[in-house]
Every structure is written in C-alpha cells, then in structure tokens.
Length: 225
Image 1 (cartoon, rainbow, N blue to C red):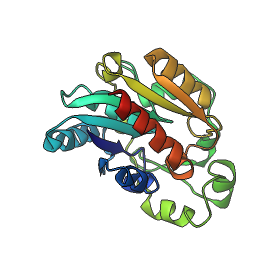
Image 2: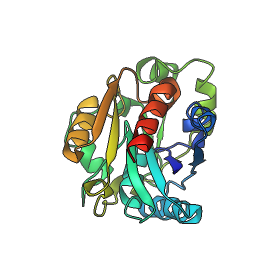
Image 3: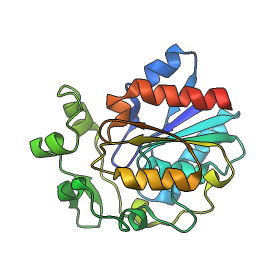
C-alpha cells in the first residue's frame, strides 16, 4: 500500500523530513505532496491527482490543515484508510475556521499575521519558537522558516464535503501539548470520528519532534488494513 503524506497550512514536504526515512527503511512506498495552499478545493484536486496516478491502494496521512484535505480526498476509491497527525477532521459543511472558533483561541493566534488579500502567515520570532515550537531543535528552525509559505484564506473557509472518515478506518495522533491546534479540539474530533487514537507529548510540530511515534502509528494503520 502506498503512503501519501499531506502537509499543513504554510507547509511543504519538509514537514515529513524525519518521518519519510523511517518509512522507506521499512520498505514502504511514500509520496509527500506539495499543495498550492490557495483553496481547499484546489488542494483536494491536486492531492487527488496524485492518488489517481499511483494506481493502487493508498493510505492518506495528514498533518494539521492537511487533515481537511485527506478528509475530502479519502472519498476516492483507491484510499483505504486515513491517519490524522494533530490534524483537522471536519464534518460535512464544516470549515477549519469554524472548528477553531468554537473554542478559546490557541496561543499561536498572537503570532498570526494577515496579508492584504486575506492570506495568512505565522511570524516565527524567537518568542514564537519558545512558546509554540519549543521542542523543535534549534538547527531545524531555520529550515522550517525557509520552507514556510503563505496560505490563502480560502483553505480555512471553504466547507468540507461528505467526510471520508465516516466510512474509512481512521487513526488519530493527538499532540498533548499543542499550542497551535488545541489538544481538546483534537480529542473531540478523534472521538467524533471513532478513530483509533494515541496521545503523545509535545508541540504541533509532531512529525519533526516525534517522527518515530508518527511512523509507528502509520505502521499500525498499514498492519490493520
């Protein structure tokens, strides 16, 4: 089964830099997508094209906003399961913004900056790293900063269609100390999905700081499927 990794808002395949070698060392076929981040519909279409090109069974893995993408891409026939890594799992008609607005603001909100056309970027100051990504190694931070991209508002405000997690087996990794996507939001979504759930310590940068645990959950999903 082919593993397709989907990054979050502002991200690139660099999100999975620490995870991919663990999967390939285990003999797994892996593709990490680079989504345009201009709209949810566009990112779903782009990821779906990659799934279609693989031409065989697929396990989708999404981090953060990437969970909203896989929730929609998962309706494609080749997709056999979904793994959410500190990720959004919207229900039909929900948006990313709509989910977070039901809860108190996460600490990351003070570092978010909006551009003239409504696009979003996070300001990665020293204070940001100390509060939001304290467990990302200092040598990794410049790489993350260099890879970071602007995200158009539409990725957060376009509604989800029928969620694939209603019919597909799903797994969820909760980041227990997350200050970007509040842990209680993650737990609530995982419970609503009926996902096989594990909880790990650490920040929202789970694929970077807990790659072994992410890879272990992916392997658990593959073995189950």
